[in-house]
Length: 440
Image (cartoon, rainbow, N blue to C red; front, side, top):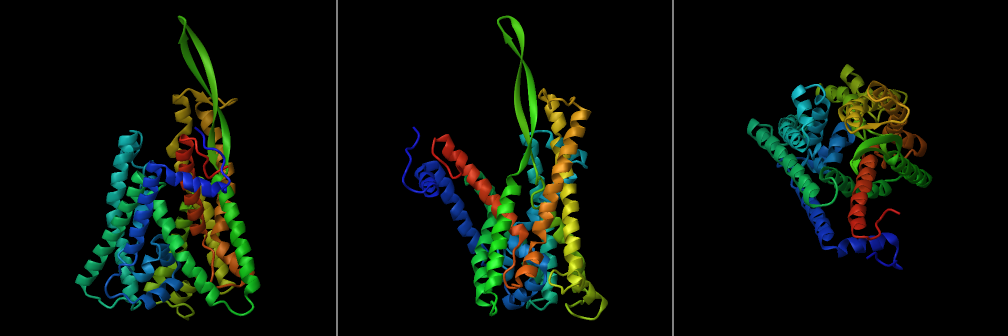
């Protein structure tokens, strides 16, 4: 029976209802317990690391800052979980892009659940060498900056193996959340890392604020709230494509033709935050290479000029080069990744096999052309939105002049996406038992 309306606020009542159900309570407790274990692992340091020197390096290297984001601040301590789940995300992106190109992967993708499981196993195996290369690159960079005390080969191998094991452990914990807890485990691991850093970032920002920045902080708060609102809208925004299904029913010795209607929800932001990751990696790569070659911020050498150009903290007008390139790359990668994902879904083929058709459009090539046209048109809105979110730190800094607190577009997308997905899953669990959920 449906629960009677309570005098408590809807959100509090939904939380109470969730914990009153034994199976849902068990899932929530498993999720919370795994997140506690993740935060403990994130504070297990690699021997010989200079945390103060690493903090200075992270402040001047946006790509390492992104890795620190995915690792929940573990890179700042250079713990065994310093790489977070980033190697697994990289492996997943590579497999996704290679599936339409490699016939063997394409056949696996068409085999249903068993094929997806085999692709998942391939992704996990690919993560290991990627984690090894990423771990060695981090060690080499930190050692070159004097942030690691030991430089011999044995110590390097031990550190790299520890980093690989840490990433594999976090991915395993994420899979346990997906299987036994609530929500997507990998996303929740990243979400927990972001939220764990937030109080420290806000505290440092307010403690180090300069006199006269009160108005700037208020403006920054307003920009953050407005951006969060836009992220929610564009994350949920989609266009409904009406679809008709025709089927034959045998009744009373005769065959009757029946039809039903449905729709295909085509998301405005199909690519998610993947374009931001691609664009960040590309736009910061020249600066990282120049840093390894001896370039320093503010220097006069050629490599130092490269570091200055490809740095988000560069002074104007040089800084405009970085942000303009970042904006354009996000738009380009949004279209590229959306096209790849749309081709893998093969919606025209699926509709044709299921006897569905778009009203007024012939099945086959015309349906494919129509759906391609729709996805390209709505992707413009999603791509420009992602590009706007990507350059939000630059806009916020220009408007507020607050340097200690910066908005991260990628982190906002992750937080909003994970919260919405988790709330929907809990909503479904409560709705099955006729409870009122979180979403009205």
